[in-house]
Length: 155
Image (cartoon, rainbow, N blue to C red):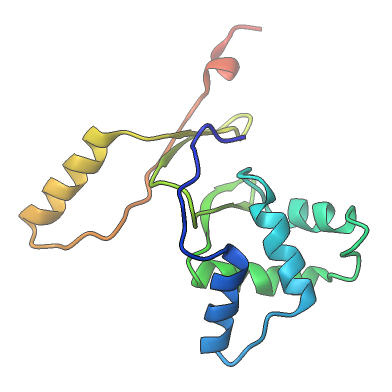
């Protein structure tokens, strides 16, 4: 679970997704709405298989197919509602991005734990580097790999 607090957003994730789909000539089906609700229910990191499992355990969404989940994840990512955080053990791990502050991740190569953190000095340094190159930055994604404290302990 994340220690980051959510930000106030102008419209709900479902409405933002509905708008995005409308610009692509697609519609928000009940299955896609279930997927968005499940993704935004908590700010936990997840992969597609975990999301499928969570959805099939819901009594109201057992009709959501695996292929619908994969297509919806691609659309949600393109819409800017979720982002891929990392590849851990050949799994694409996602988190929802909409409604949460800019943050970065420490990723344990042994257990796969993801630790979220915010650091204004890193953000300022990246802005400085971008500016020195005449680059206008609109965001960043930093993933630091290594071994977490728990995995570093002797057996």
